[in-house]
Length: 241
Ligand code: BJW
Ligand code: ZN
Image 1: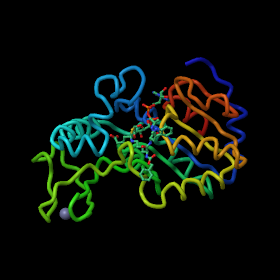
Image 2 (image 1 turned 180 degrees about the vertical axis):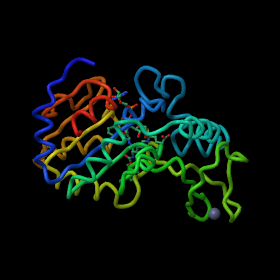
Image 3 (image 1 turned 90 degrees about the horizontal axis):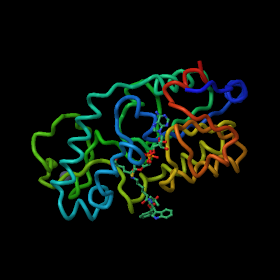
């Protein structure tokens, strides 16, 4: 990683009373969890519309579940990395702090983060299509695909697919946090998926300094007050430590 001048963003973070964070798949890349887009990304080998839409599930629930069961297995082998852990340290230090994640992998929970706004749900939860019940299930592999609810209905992964609304009230809470933050830290997201990506200009227009950490450029790199190019697991501990 090239030498980055972290003094300015470090100062912004240490002086800010309120900080909000938006994370994406890139923060878990160094834990060995594949991202969606880019080199080695899941969407290079699988078509999103075949697997991550309600229509795909209606067409072939077993196929969709096979993919999620495989991913659950990969994630179960992964451990939180120094980037997840640095955010736990930041949370301890800040009076106003919100972690907003697009990730469904649960690595922020396992690192020890407190309240997490999971915009796209949680791969470790299941939801019944018949009665609406939802419950945690960490079994890997699941004993039977597709899994069923106690009521006999078919269960789906507790995640948000394309074309589906985010969990009730969650975007409102995320916007509230973004508006209250003096620093908005955007980590490891391609910022392609909405409404999550819209939080970045929203925070900026609400007066937050936007700091981006990413190995590549994103549509919001130019809007950021500071864009740090490199792996989150290396940059974040230096930025926050
Ligand atoms: C590193 C790194 C390292 C790598 N360190 N960095 C046109 C315009 C606007 C919106 C739309 C539109 N057409 C359709 C829409 C809506 C659609 C959308 O946004 N589509 C776009 C693709 C155009 N959005 C939706 O459908 C959403 N719902 C919605 O809008 O509802 C409206 C509604 C209202 C009322 C009733 C009904 C509907 C829902 C979106 C759900 C997204 N779901 C997924 C799957 C979740 C389940 C699962 O995991 O299987 O969420 S898709 C996938 O993308 C996943 C992610 O959370 C999400 C974002 O990806 P992310 O995290 O940014 O990852 P990558 O892979 O894209 O990027 C990784 C980044 O990390 C890269 O930049 C790397 O460079 C970087 N990186 N290593 C730091 N070590
Ligand atoms: Zn049920």
